[in-house]
Image 1: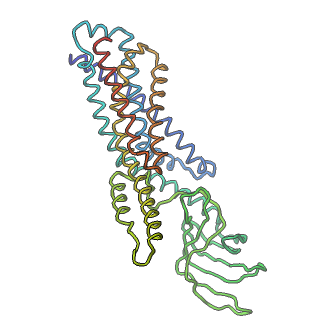
Image 2 (image 1 turned 90 degrees about the vertical axis):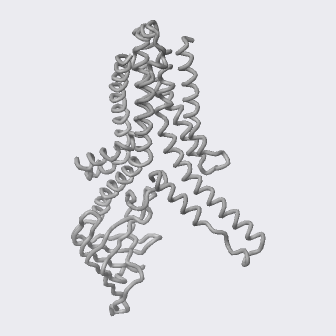
Image 3 (image 1 turned 180 degrees about the horizontal axis):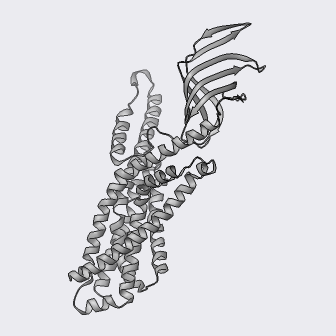
Length: 396
């Protein structure tokens, strides 16, 4: 019996390593080509940057590749096991199917623990670090739009007046010897701003085409008054520039990139943040309308966080559900061909993640309980897999 367990476990582990590596490679290529393509075209993606990006992306794609790999491994191994009549030989010796696959089910539970660690802690942190890495690389592209030692004219826009900009030296998003000449309607210099140091960044990093800003330190300003120049100091040290770039944020991660602990803290803060208005200063109708808006906003925001929390936990149990349904399906398929097992795995993965995508799309509709929809594929796969395994064990 131990020999059989060791044989099956070795076969599953070897196939698991291969399938996880294939799925990880496919998912990595998709993300790298989509998110680093701009840097590759601009020749800002060095070999070191690509290696760092791959290293940070591996835990994030592993959260998806590990359940897919376990499902494919179960289908391939038990499909071959059945096609080679090995299962018939084992049954003829009086060993039940449940006793035979018990170490594989224990292995899937162990992988559920690994998936929980990856989904709830490692993958979100690596994803944020990956985004920060691309942001720093994108800053070099922004700085490239402001060349060293040259006067460049930035035309007037609806958001800002025209400028003549000069930067003595650029180092990433760090600027030195910054000179800004503001132009009036007649294209004459209206004010002069000088700063020894500055940084270039985007104000709204969540959009794809943002407006670029300068933050200047120790600035000195002079404004033209007729033929004289009068020193003055503006209230702000930030200047909008009409340079469109694509960059990423290094600030607080989005809800989809938070760890499980960060999501719990955010949920607690939201529940404490919303407070009811002073009823003594409002009419009953105004108070009812405001209360309804506040409660709706609170419900929408908290539901979005709850959906992400349930998604992370539900993903962690995918390995067990996939294994439970993959073993009897592989036995029923009774095929040695690898392409058949991979095709079946892709169909099951599509069904599983369609429920997850449905739950994420309904997170603004709490009346549909989207956080529970995410759990449905786990319950369905585990229930169907348990029934199929029981029937296969009885030879039905």
